[in-house]
Length: 117
Image (cartoon, rainbow, N blue to C red; front, side):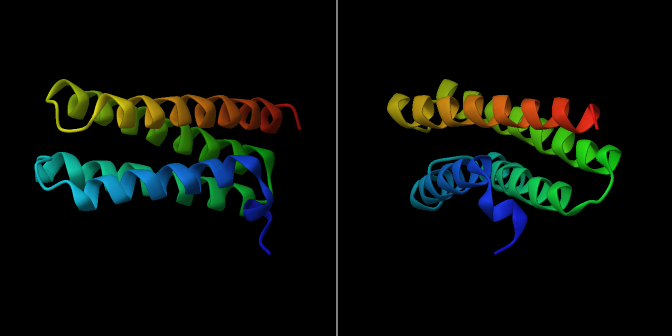
């Protein structure tokens, strides 16, 4: 098992990505540009976390955690556009929003921790 797979934040990212990607693939009414951009940003969260955990220096780790958190913010901004356009049910939006808020807080803790090493 890789180190990133042991993290609670990784489990939350995987759960959120599964829900989000299922929603995007099943809902053809969502604008294609928004859908593609959201797929990229949600995958970027997972990839940057994995890359950061694999880095050796605190500065390198912190950089990738910051990038992951930036992708969380990008994903939320895209979700809000989808909600405002009524492309997703409010319940789905709220569930994804809450998950991203939790992920953002966990990543912030990792960023702060990496900065203190």
